[in-house]
Length: 230
Image 1 (cartoon, rainbow, N blue to C red):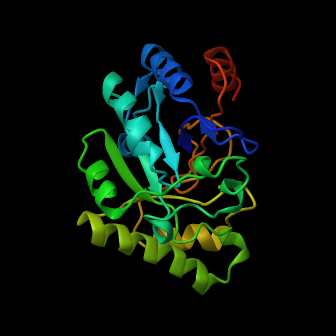
Image 2 (tube, rainbow, N blue to C red):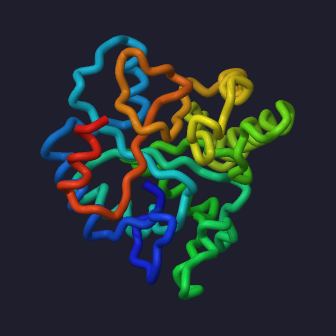
């Protein structure tokens, strides 16, 4: 997921309405064991996957993750991981895909540090890093990649006073990161990283290339089909 909100137009398909999000949560709770991402990593490392796990993640740290998504996660007691782009904290987004809304009020705001601390203190929420400025890391020189990776980790650990062990590659497609990116994430001290390659996690999944399925504002029947077809 990215955003949980209601907007006038959503050409990039990044916004899920609260009612649809709730229907997804009900389905996931009924059909899967919804666990935190660190627990999934542990089960993968220890070869303890059951095949019935599901993990919920959010990219980019939009304010509506706190105001709209968290109350529903709390209602159904389901954990989630939020990957934070640290260079935009507290700003109104000017990312290209967030500048296409017809109504300026639909343009999202990123969490401020205090809100991030509030989220981090919730037992259902895990915070991970998502770079500083959301670049396509594969297009950067190795030292610039390292800066994006390390500084995002340092910023979050400074704000939250907790270790940050999970990373998500911006965009996350097969051409959006490379072997140098993976090595940079490993050297920075992360224990696992997520891509957005639409597959299921299995024992063959690499810890630093965990697949994820982008979720859209579609009904449960489409969610079921997308999950079962991977």
